[in-house]
Length: 161
Image (cartoon, rainbow, N blue to C red; front, top):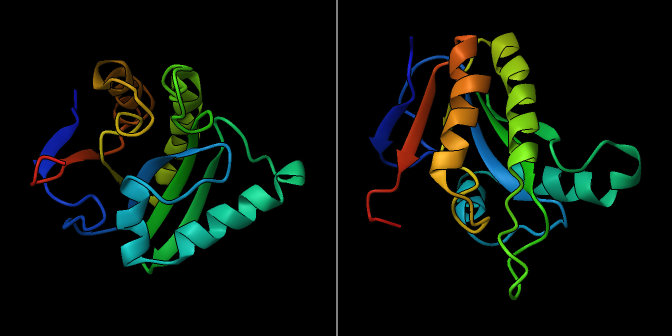
């Protein structure tokens, strides 16, 4: 059975050929300014602009936990804004990660990736500012993407960040 490929490097710069989706987890309160999204925004302005517009119109567009927004940033590259975090880390209310929402979003992402014939590239989603653990997220990625025949590469940043 295929497995997740782990590499050191920048998830915003996958070196494989063909269609690619760069997946990451966003919060459900419209915040974009810390963590992996900074690397995304340094490379392309469109995902942040699309996410903010999606959040502003949330009353009528399906924005919420488990939702996925695909934003085309290059001819063969899309960024998947996946809502898998409730709020942001402020005080002692526990980690904002929502594993069920990540699971739902990954299931939706699988459909998009299959339609595009795309591989998926990501950092260890939900495990940075969202406060999740990879031991809980990795089985979701395996079940929702890898077992559906989608090639997945997970990037660990070279500087240990």
